[in-house]
Length: 210
Image (cartoon, rainbow, N blue to C red):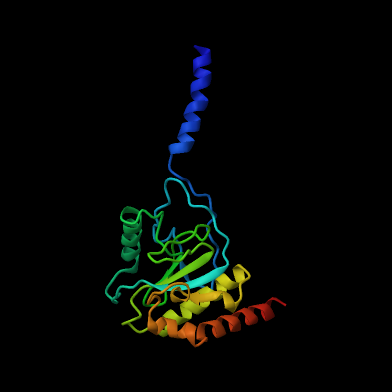
């Protein structure tokens, strides 16, 4: 009887570890105060369950758009919850495909943990890419100044954090044939505006740290 108990307890622990929900252990990111980010905890992100993805090392920053028009009346938080549910139920992804999302007012929302690669409906491998998505369709919508500034500020933060250069910044369409991130957003990548502003912020930070 003692032997049976001794064998069964480790077995229960072993199998519980195999089939139980995945419990993430990433510490909550401490963003600089000038970068206004709504954290996952603040918008009530639902944790990843099941087997976690293979971790990644960030080497690129890639800018996307949502691909669907987003109106001022829409609630960004409700949109995030719906996107998370759709991503998990319909696409069978572990989470929202992007690491950060930006709404019409330039508010940044923390989404999929950066430790894990994003997902895409197109034929490029996003492993190693930090994915920034601006809510909306910038083939038909116009990017607002607050949104552009948020893209620049967030990209500069990520470039500094992961020791990247402006050569590591691109749009989705730089890697595969697609309209993403839309012509009115992509033009700021194509003409170098985003890269220039990111470089300016990185140089400014470097000077301040001296």
